[in-house]
Structures are given as structure tokens and as C-alpha cells.
Amino acid sequence: MDKRKRIPYHLNAESVESLPMQEIIWILRGADEMIGVGGRSLLCKLLKGSNSKVIFDHKLNLSPVFGVFHNLTIEEIMHRVDKTIYLGYLKLEYRGKLPVFSFTESGWEIERETMVNELYKTISECVQRNEITYCEKLKDRNRGMILALNDKLRREADASFSSFLEAWKVIEYRNVRDEIGVTLEIINERGKSDETS
Image (cartoon, rainbow, N blue to C red; front, side, top):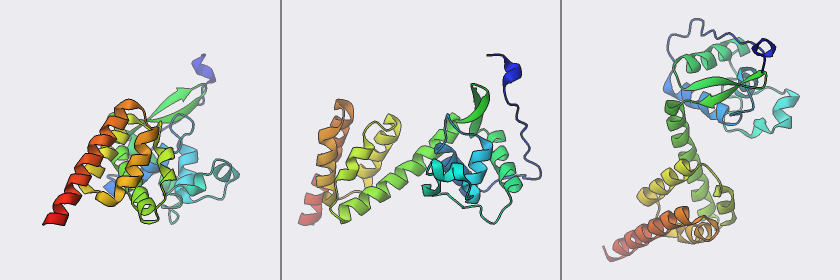
């Protein structure tokens, strides 16, 4: 690919000396919606809560961070996004002629924890409503994230999660299925100890 055909970008964190961790988490969560396909302008529109057609065409309005920076200008949001890149949580890589986002290792660690917490909350709500079909949406997700989710379930879930986990276990690949099996044993044992105490 002739580099001259690439669309250039220029980072500018302007006067953003530091970013609160919550803002970094929001920016990373928004970037996750467009890893490998979108860049800074699209992310800024998402975080602003833009009514742009591209946002709705890609269903980015459904993102949990849609509009979190509604009170800022696009330029102010861009400076925060660029600061997140400068801090080493995100990077831009060319796909064809466009610069698109990818996570750095430290950025993915933060985003993975955010996603695990979101998934755990959603699973808890499904368990309360006795809905187990959500487990189908967990298959083929990032393996490291799913293993981290299993760890959280082992630490925090109770026996009421058993039906959900059993349904999930049936559809998963062997390695993840084995991990879910261990999680089931742990939460069921914990349920027995709670009954006897």
C-alpha cells in the first residue's frame, strides 16, 4: 500500500494534562465498539451522543457510553481521545487508507474488566428473570474475557446461577466448558455450605 494514499491524522491532547480513570474507561468502552473498523471521529460522535446517520446505521446509539460526553464539544472530546492514545491505552493502525483503533495491552486489561462487569450484571439480570438464552451471546467471545468472567462468577455467583451456567456449558467449546464445570461445582458447594450454616 502506497503510504501517500493513507489519510493522515494528527493527535492533539491540547490542554488535557490528565484524565480521570472513569473518562478513560468510557473512551475505551466506546472504542471497543469500533476496534479495527472505526477511528477518532466516529468515536467522538458516539461519546457526544450524535444523531449522525452513521451512528444509527451501526447501532452505536445502543452503546452504554453513547452520549456520556454530551456536555462537551467534539473538539474537547477529541482531545480526551487523543490523550488516551498518548497515555498508551489505545493506538491507531492503518487498515487500507484509514487509521482505526486497536487496544494496547494495558488498554485491553481495563476494557476486559469493564466488559466482565457488564456481562456479569447482564447475566445476573437474566438469572433473576429466569432467562437462559443470553448464554448464546457469550459463545465465540474473547477467550481471556470469558475466563475472567468465569473467575468473577466463581467469586460472586450463588446457586441461583446454576441453570444459566448449565445451559451455557452445553453450547461452549471444551476448554471453556471445563471452566464452567468448575465454576458450577464451586457455586453449588458454596450453596450447600450456606444451607448448613
